[in-house]
Length: 83
Image (cartoon, rainbow, N blue to C red; front, top):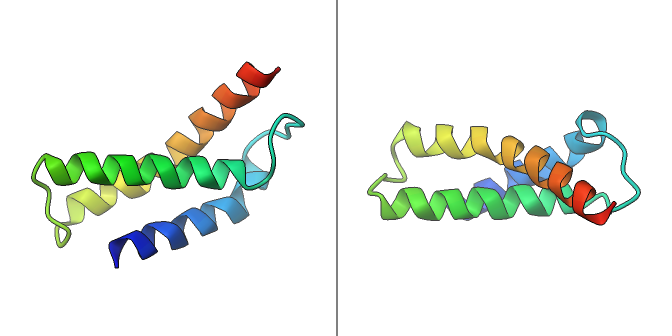
């Protein structure tokens, strides 16, 4: 169930990404959403291994704030690599 929330949040970030990220010809419009979903899933997994519980607010706060950061950094890095 929690993964569905992350997927919905990644979809919202995908809608916002074209307005926040600079335009690039080096990747498609769904790539930032995929990057944010993967980064959120990895951070969720790491926090779960560290002992955070799903019903605590800290895991949600950390993941929800790190997904846009991961999307921005990943898209910037991908644009730099492909250019």
